[in-house]
Image (cartoon, rainbow, N blue to C red; front, top):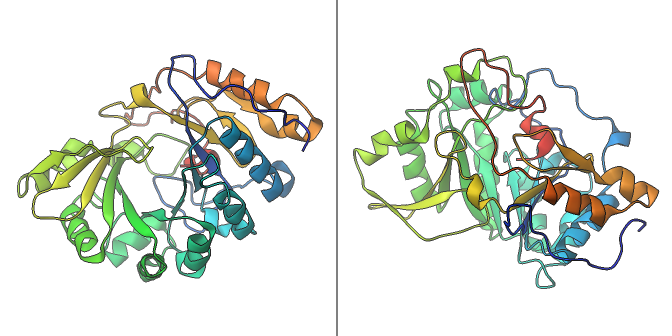
Length: 334
């Protein structure tokens, strides 16, 4: 395809950080409307503005040629993208040929349908966003979600041989009483658990300051009952991992606000529009879609993005504060 030339140097940013992890957003669309993530009435990108499956595959292969070892398919909700099976199969074929791992983050609503395909494509683990086991709270947080559908998806994923990690966003007043039940549920169902602080990305109807809770406070009820111990585990993302006393669950903590993790950032994000954002919390980007379609210098643009990657984001949440960036998480890819 035009714009792709012989492989140049591996990916290193201007701060000397080795970049080996690509978050590839395959759609900005989602079948849920989680309150901390997006507005209830969203306007999504027109079809002409998004990369085709073929273009995504070509760019992903280019990144692997440049030294990307892990790819995570994200969105929006990646399983709503038509022909996601073709992309997963194409990228799965790269495992062992430069790529170490292909993973996916999903809300679970369509996981039961797609789990066998993902396993056949070479995906071995998935992250499922699940913020509560309370059905009424789940419907409130997601606005339209059905907890039972998500649970069936998780069960189908495990039946298909996929390891499942639950991603739980900490939300004051909405699920701060749900950590211990979620931990016990994960133990009973063979899942690990990662907790995430809410991030100020995109305008939403709720004031995020009403629901922001730092993870040290969210985890306090667990610490009062069981000891947790740091463990040396890396999965390519920003989580710090802990073992929990009397539990088989590995607990991850992602703290973009209370304990910045940018010093070890190894990630680059490619959006469904073909934009590379240098940082989740910044607006600077380069446009690979135009270069790819017009025969431009794709690798030169990737190098420019790396050179401009900031040392850290500048997230903060305050009463009535503007979001760090106007675009929603679903536009960038989680």
